[in-house]
Length: 66
Length: 390
Image 1 (cartoon, rainbow over the protein chains, first blue to last red):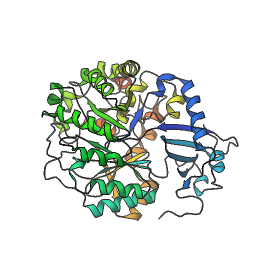
Image 2 (image 1 turned 90 degrees about the vertical axis):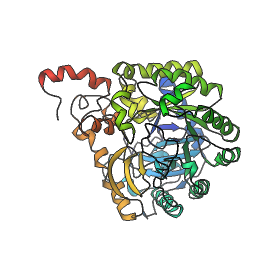
Image 3 (image 1 turned 30 degrees about the vertical axis):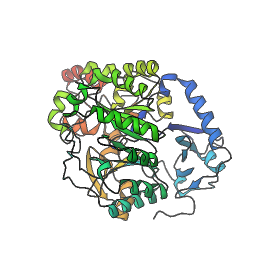
Image 4 (image 1 turned 60 degrees about the horizontal axis):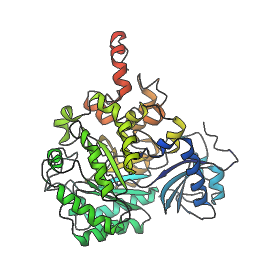
C-alpha cells in the first residue's frame, strides 16, 4: 500500500512512450523482462528528468475544473 | 512538462523522452504543488481523468477489412472538423495528456493534420494509427506532428491479404518507409488472431528490418465485423499461454520493443511476473474509464472503443465531469464484484478481469475473461462444484 504522506520523494511508476493505437491501451512488457533492476534504473532516469524542472500544473491547487 | 495532481501525488507527462511518471506527494511538492484538493479524503480508486483518449474521428474507410472493429464503410459517419476541435477542447480541459486518432481511416479526413496541430496547441500529444494505403510522401512528412504513428500490418505478403481481405501489404510497407524517413516514432499494429499467430515472428522481423520503434500486438476482438468471425479467430488456449514467452523471445532476438494491448494482460499474468514490477511499469489489464476512454464519431464518451455504455456526450461538459467523477461503473466496478477465479487472483487489481468485451461476447459482461489461461484452468474444477457463477 502507498502512504500518500510519505515524506520521502518517491517515483511510483513510469510508462515510457505513447500509445498510437486508437482502440486499446498498449502495455509495454519490455521492462518486465529485465526484472527489478529495470525499475531501479527507470526510477533514477525519471528522477533526473524531473529534477530542476517546473511543470505546467493541470487542475492544480488553485484551479477549478472547467 | 505537464503535471496533474492525483490522490497518490501526481502524474507528470514528459515529452523528451515521452513518458508518464507517477510521483508521490512529496515529489509533487518538490515540483511546486503545495497542496491539491485531490489529496484530501479517501483514495477514489481511479484517476481524476483518463491519461489518454481514443478519438474515433470517423467510421469511414474504403479498405473493407474483413474484421474491422468499428465496421467502417466508405460512407460511414465522421466527426465534423468543428466538433472534433470541441472534443479536443474538452479533453484538454480534463487534463488528458494523449489523444489517439483513429477510425476508420483518419488519414482520409481533410482536417486530420489541422486537428493534430490543434491538439498540440492545446497541450495534447496526438498519435495516429493508419492502414497507410496511398500515403504520399507529403502526407508522411506532415505526420511529423504526431507523437507516434503506427501502420496496421497483420501479416507479411500473402498473410496480409488473408488477414485483412485485400492485398495492401506493399502499400503498408511503402507507407512505413516514408514515415520512417519523416517521423520520430513509427511502429506496426498487428492483430493477433488464431490464424495470424504464427505470423508474429515475421512481422517483428519486418519491423526490425525497417528500423521501426515498436510492434503493438492487438487481440482479435468480437466487435464490428470481427463479431462474426470471433469464434474462429479467438486464440486457442495453447496460443494464449504461449504468447508472452514468444514476445519475450522475439524482444531479445530482434531488439524491437513489443507492446501488448490491455486485453492481453491475463496472458501476461499467467506467467506470474512480479506484481510490484508490473504495477511500476503500468502493465495492467482493462483500464476502461480510468486510464483510457473513447470518443465515438457521434460524440459519445465510452470507457472503451470496443464496447461499454455511453457515459455522456463529449459536448456536454457537466456530463463528462460526472462521468469521470463517478461513472464508468461497467469497467471500474468489476474488481469489487469479480467472481472466482478472478476474486482469488493476486493480479486482480492490475488485470481487472481481462477484457469485458470478450466476456460479454461469450455470454456475460461480469464474468472473467474466458480467454484467460487461469480461467481456462479453473473451469473443470468449477464445473464439478458449481462455483463459477457470481
